[in-house]
Amino acid sequence: MNLALDVENLTLRFNSFVAVNKVSMAVEAGSRRAIIGPNGAGKTSFVHALTGAIAASAGTVRLCGADATGLSQAARVHRGLARTFQINQLFAGLTVLENVLIAVTERAGRAGVFWRALAAERQAIDEARSLVELVGLGARAGDEVSALPYGMRRLVEIAIALATRPKVLILDEPAAGVPTTQSEAIFERIAALPRDLTVLFIEHDMNLVFRFAERITVLVAGEVLTEGTPGEISRDERVREVYLGRRGHHAAA
Image (tube, rainbow, N blue to C red; front, side, top):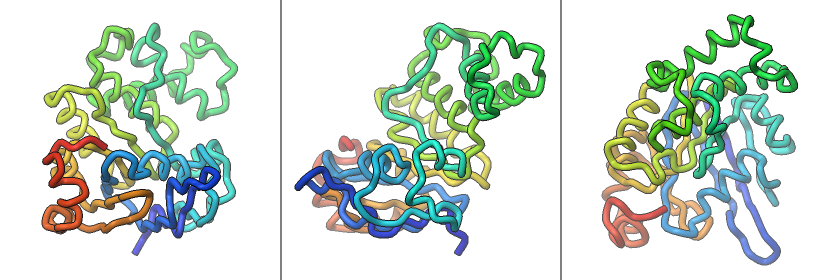
């Protein structure tokens, strides 16, 4: 099996509190994996430890076969591990294209150059425009982010993450706070991303999870309860008891 991510016994402790307890996960390259679980399950804490945002207390993280355990968050990004956040972090006063262009130039090591000085750099602009079009915002490229519906802002954030040229893209609740019609559009765009990109996402809407995930990992109290295909997870009585059965297909993460 060609693994994009191979996580073994990842643990995150805060003094006596164990937020993530010996979580192991093997994610095949090019796959779409969902992480679900009730409130306090440790989903975001796991992503923090996985991406290096918070140093793990124990465990191993391999990215495309290479050990990334001791790497900083920035170094993991350079190795191909990118993420988005529950709350978007955008320049609201700049256009969609400008936001993505900044990300492209930062990756190229030109973060200290004010973006307007790069107007003649056709290659960077073309790359940024192609990413904007990839997430379905080509017609809004010249609009300020502040003028976009919230769902479209989430797509801008995904385009920015893609500007790092990741091998693995982690999405932390990409549809959080987004109306149902917009959340479906977001996941349609996620589903259309190139298959050489591995996507790992946290999501609370079970309809979206069952529709778009190929495999699902269920976390409870910082530990893996089970994992399997959407069909297997929907039939698992333990999952129904601790998560799905409690509040239906729209339980909160």
